[in-house]
Image 1: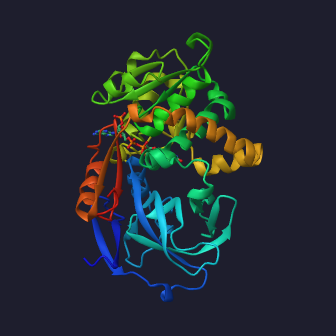
Image 2: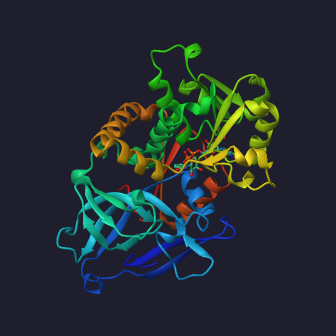
Image 3: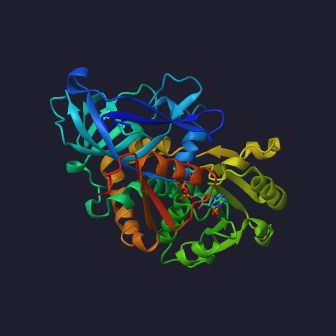
Length: 377
Ligand SMILES: NC(=O)c1ccc[n+]([C@@H]2O[C@H](COP(=O)([O-])OP(=O)(O)OC[C@H]3O[C@@H](n4cnc5c(N)ncnc54)[C@H](OP(=O)(O)O)[C@@H]3O)[C@@H](O)[C@H]2O)c1
C-alpha cells in the first residue's frame, strides 16, 4: 500500500468478528474545502471499550461519527492523537497536534465548526457533545506529554469511572443499597471506579459506608487483588458467597445476562438496581430475555449525558477541577498497574483487534496502536 493513501478499518455491523481495510487516496491541501483540516491519526488507545463501540455501532449510533458509504459496515471510533497535515483553516495550522475522537484509520478530514478555549468542536448534529471536542496539546489540561501512551488508554475510561462514582454516590445515594457489586472488576473502567470509591472513603471504615465488591473471572482475580481498591473480591461462580441479606446495586460493566439472572435469583428484593455501563462480556450480552421485574430495575449509565448534567449543575470550573484532581491522583502510579503494549501497521492492528474481540487481553496490559509503521519510532 502506498503511504500516500489513507486506510480505514471497517467492521461488519452484523458480525463484529469480520473486519476489512479500505484504501483511498489521501487528499492534498487543494482538495480540501475551505475550513477543513486533514489529520493524521498518529496513534490511539484500544480496549474492550472500542469493541463495545463496534457491538453497539448501529444501536447507539457509534457508526454515525465517521460514516462510510459501504452498506452494512461501520468505522470504529478510537481515542487518539492527531496531527494536522493539510489545513484550510485560518486558526489551525499544519503541525497542530490534538487529542480526540477519530476513526480507526490512518487519517481523517475534519471540519471544525467552532474554536474553544481548549481546541475546537466539530458539529455532528445531535450526536453526544463530548465526542465532538478536540483538545489541542498546547491548551489541554489533561495532556501528559511524558506519559502520552498511558493517557491514550485511560483518559476516556477513567473519566467514566470518575462520573460513575459520582452518579452512584452523590447522584443516587447508591440507590439505598449497602453494597455496590462491580462486574468485570479487572477492566480499566471498573478499577478506576473502585479507585475513586476508595479515595472517597479513605478515612472511613467499611462498616460505616457502602462497600464495593469486585466481581471478576478466576484468571483476572490475582490482578484485581493486588490493586487493593475493592473492599472484597468475588469470582462470578462464587456470587452466592455475598450474603443475600445484603442490599446491592450492580454497576454492570460486563453486560453478562447470566450474571444478572444469577444476581436476581440470589438477592431477590435486595437487588435494588442494575446500572448498565458496558459489555466487556459482549458475547454473553444477548443470551435470551430477562424477567420483566429485572428489566424494570435496570437503567443505563451513559457518561456523556451525566457529564452534561454535571456541567449544568456545577459549572465548568468545578467540573474540570474535579476531573483534574482525580486524574492526577490516578495517573501518579499508573505504570505500576498497566504495562504498555504497542503495535503498528494493518497486520498488527488486525491481530490486536481479534485478540480484544475474543477477550484474550490481559488486565495488566494496555494497548496503543497505529496504522503508521513509524508511529513509535
Ligand atoms: N457507559 C459508558 O459511558 C462507558 C464509558 C466507558 C467505558 N464503558 C464500557 O466499559 C466496558 C469496559 O471497558 P474497558 O475498556 O475498561 O475494558 P478493559 O480494560 O479492556 O477490560 C476488559 C475486561 O473484559 C473481561 N473479560 C471478559 N471475558 C474475558 C476473557 N475471556 N479473558 C479475559 N478478559 C475477559 C475482563 O474482565 P473480568 O475478567 O474482570 O470480567 C477484562 O478485564 C466496555 O464495555 C466499555 O464500553 C462504558
